Image (cartoon, rainbow, N blue to C red; front, side, top):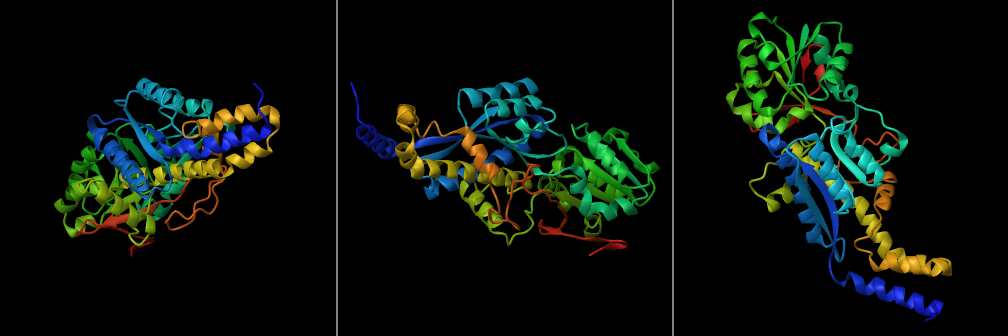
Length: 402
C-alpha cells in the first residue's frame, strides 16, 4: 500500500502527541556495595539520588515522563560491578550511570560506558588519563589530588612529619606521592596497626585515608596521645559520617586540630542547591543522613537529569520539524524512532547534552561548565566541625588559622 508524504507526516503528529499519554520511564542506573564497612557510604549516596528523583518527579518537569532509579547490589566485587553495569546498559537500557566506585579499580565500567555511548558520572576524583573516546562519556565530580590538597597546603608545610594512615585504598599510592611532593619533611604511609603514637613527635600531621568506622577510634587516640598534632580527614573518609561519630567525644580544643577536606560545598548553607537538598532529603526520609556522600549523589543526579531533560525537551519540541524536513526515503526510520520516543531517547544525545553544558546555574557557588577534562567542580574546601555539628570553612595562615 502506498502512502503520501502528507499521510506519513500526519501519522508522525499522531504518534508524537498520543504515545506520551502513558508515563514512560527515564531510567538511571546505579550499582552499589551495601555490605560491610562501605554500607553507609553507599546508602547515603543512593538516598541522595532518590531524594532528588522523587522531588523532580513531583514537579512533573518531564511531562509524561518520569525519572526512575534502577539499583543493583554488587557486594564490592569487581566482576559483579561489571556484570551489573552491563545488565543496566544492555537490558535495562539506562540513559545514564551514576557511581561512587573508584574507576581505576573497576576499569571495565568505563569501557562499557564507551561501548554503549552512555553518560557515566562518578563522585570519585580524577587520577587517571583516558583515551578521548572513553573520556567523553565520563564526568568526574573532583579534579586531581594536587588540586584537592591546595586548601591544606600550609598544614602540610608546617607539619614536621606526615603520616598517611591508609586501609590500602586504590588511591593510596597517589595520595602518598602528592603528599611527598608537597613538603621537604618526611612522609610515611602506614596502616592503622602500624601507628605508634608514643614514638611520634609533636606537630605531626595525620592524614586519614580510612573508612569512618576505623577512623573514629584513630581520631580519639591521636587527639588524646598527641594533642599538639593535627588531623586531616580526606574526602573519601566522609566528613559528615566521621564528624558525627567523634565530635561529641572531643573537647573544643581537640576539635580545633581536626580538619576535613571536602569536595562538595555542603557547609555553604546559603546556596540554593544545598537548601533544596536538605528540604528534599527531609521529605524523602526525615531520618536519612544529609551527609556529604548523600549530597554528592544528589548533585550528580541533578546533572544527569538535566542532560536527560534537554534530550526529552528536544524530542518533544523538535520531532515534528525533524520529520518534516528529512528526506522522504528515511521517513519510515524516523516514524519508528518517534513511536518509541520514551524508551528510545538516545543515550548519545544525553552524553552530548552533558558535554555541551556551559555556565549552567545549578544553585551552587558557581555555574557549571563541562570542559575537556570532564571535571564538574574541581574544587575542595578545608573545614572544621563546631559543637553544633555544623561544618565551617577555615583558611590556614603561616602561624595558625582564622
